[in-house]
Amino acid sequence: MGLDLHIDGERWRAHLRRVVEAYPRLVPVVKGGGYGLGLGRLARRCAWLGADTVAVGTYEEVPDVTTRFDGDVLVMAPWRPGVRSYYDRRVIHTVGRVADLETLATDAPGTRVVVEGLTSMFRHGMRRDELTAAASWCARLRLEGLALHLPMVGDRRAEAESWVAALQASRLDTATMWVSHLDDAELAALHERRAGVDVRPRIGTALWLGDRGALSVCSTVLDVHAVARGQRVGYRQRAMPRAGSLLVVAGGTAHGVALEAPTPASTVRQRAVAVATGGLEASGLALSPFTVAGRRRWFAEPPHMQVSMLALPASVPPPPIGSAVDAQVRFTTTHFDAVAID
Image 1: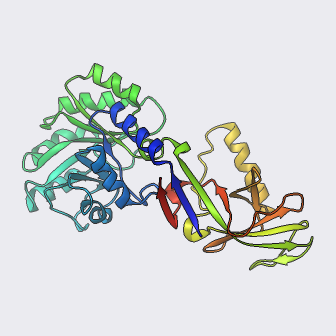
Image 2: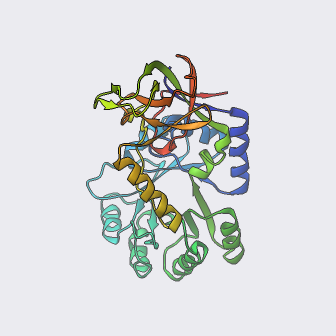
Image 3: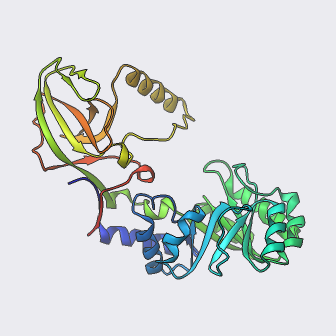
């Protein structure tokens, strides 16, 4: 009776196996809300996949994973002095500053670390010319490799190769490179050109959400009301633009409904869509993620905490109370009431 995620288990598991076969030395990424599926569920699935290491986003996510997964855990957030730390033999820390390496080497020698390179993402990491300085401190730590978080566009393989060259020119005692956002063709090319490097691809979205056809989201219809044109409804007492039905369905802001990241708007078409969408919302119209009779329907007003109110025209018969309607949501920002795997 809520906003639920249903998974075609056989199809989803087959997809997971295909990804594991396509990416040797795969490191599954398990972070945030577990891509909508839950951290604990994904941690257990990593064990089923035979992974020896998983990657989490933050230190706060470590306990939820280590209690359900027996292998190593790489924390991708950069370690900082004063940040809650886990000097557990299973935890691998990401370090992106020479000063932080010095602190760890002094206070906790032998700690497992990866050195992060500052890629064209410009988020965290060291410059190429800092790797040699990092090597002197890594000698007192347990160095597990060089980590790269690459952008989603551009010549990522060429950038990865430039970092391999920098790694080999430095005195860092490792041949392992942990990489994010290289596809199978880019990884194959990197393996071919740099055969001596042990590449460990970190994959999250393409693994867990790569076959969207195996995942379906549905919302329960909680109430249906006949409304007249001009009738006022909801918290804000908006006038209904036309006669029809008012549907109350499960799923609101507490679930992440209608919450989304800013659009990248990197193409002319995307900018045009963003402008059109913004214009509609400015006039009080917003398209919901809920589908009724084959079409996404308009919000009657912004979603409430746990439910949404939808405007349905009189020409469309309303679904009965207790029935399910489909929803299109962003999994990384959605909290489901229930997740069922067939």
